[in-house]
Length: 362
Image (cartoon, rainbow, N blue to C red):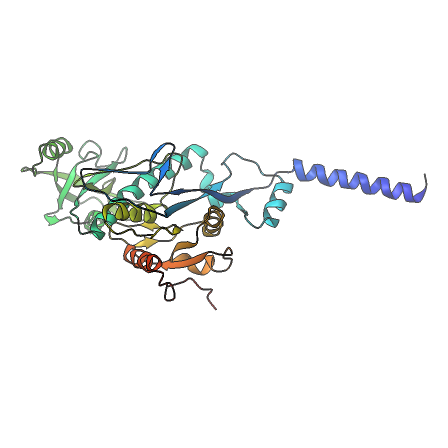
């Protein structure tokens, strides 16, 4: 066989071998890419995303889009060729599989966790929005979860309203852990509470519960040495009117800010956006504090592709987002819901010269 032919044949066989290896050899990576973006002021799946009854609402214009990131599933096995393509693609990010699914988390477990975070973000968005408008929100600390085989099992129940611990008033859910951990393992702690059935009956009747009962629980030692009783405290809110958020197939806490702004817009006469296309992201706390999220680069790309001109960006994500800003998109830095509302006022008025923009750290 002529040398040239042999060389070409060997090169072809090597190329085929490399292509086969690229397809057949699996690597422990996952991929993130821009996901759907939905206008919280509009409709999705044939019905309004935000549905408010029992309070006057006002017309809105423009967009306040929440943004998402699409990720490969937990059981998806990426091959070398896909990983290389993802690394080269501008709009995708390839990350270690454990980054998205730590400790061997399954697809079902991840979906459940995301659904719970999404539900909690909706509640916090409602609270933050109403407090921004000085509308009353009743909040109380409750037993969220009772862990199996814990000292609290059978003594406390999900939904019980915690009024005091060892006679000290409980105002925030973090107060519960702080008061319990003041004990040493094996010591008793006393919960003063309204049982869940009585609390529900009082709420239905529109009255305050009049009776509390004391429950004594002996603490046990946690792995880190702290005294615990085996519960997770939470916060239950009662709103003065009904706010429903209708958005399926979305998970995680990162839409909180945009839901809160959508609610504010619908409950105030002034049009927050002035017809502009604004997108954004960020978790939201009950007090209006905006928190960072993951996949910021994917979200800015997805938002701009849909037509967004401004992107409300959590303060802690600003430096990363500013490293690669899609053309035509202005990144607006926000740390609280107040910041976001102020920036929307400026955008509506066309006074954007002094907008707090994200910049790259030097």
